[in-house]
Length: 139
Image 1 (cartoon, rainbow, N blue to C red):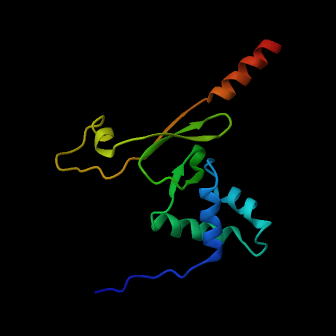
Image 2 (cartoon, rainbow, N blue to C red; image 1 turned 30 degrees about the horizontal axis):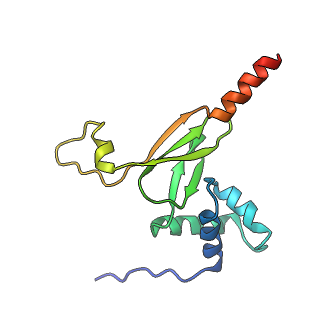
Image 3 (cartoon, helix red, strand yellow; image 1 turned 180 degrees about the vertical axis):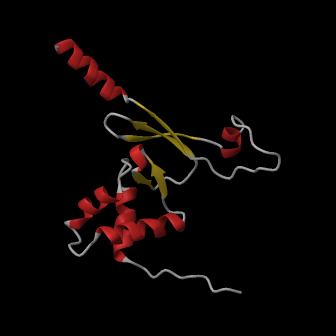
C-alpha cells in the first residue's frame, strides 16, 4: 500500500489560511502576497502559490476562476455560486447550492453522479451600475 504523502507544518501556510479566513473578499495570490509580505519579509510569490495549492488539495480552500482566468481563493468550501463584476472585478458569494439539485438544470448522462458544483455568474455589480448612471447624469 503506498504511503500517504505528509505535509509538514508551515507558519507561512497558516498565515495564508488565516488571512483567507479573515476576509470576505476573494483575493488573488498576488493580493495575498502583497498583504502578507510586510509581516513576513522572506515570503515569495512562489511560496504563496505552493501553499494555496496545498490548502486547496487538503480541502481547506477553493480556487475560483474569475475574470480573464484570474484565480481567486475562498475559504468557504461548501457548494455555492459566485457573482463576478465585469467592471471592477469584485467577487461576491451567493447562496449555498445543492450539487444534485443544481445538476438537475443540466442534461447529464445516465449514471453521472454530481459531487460538487462550481458556478460563476458574471455581470455588472450594483455599485458599478450606480456609478455609471451617476456619470451619465453629470455628462
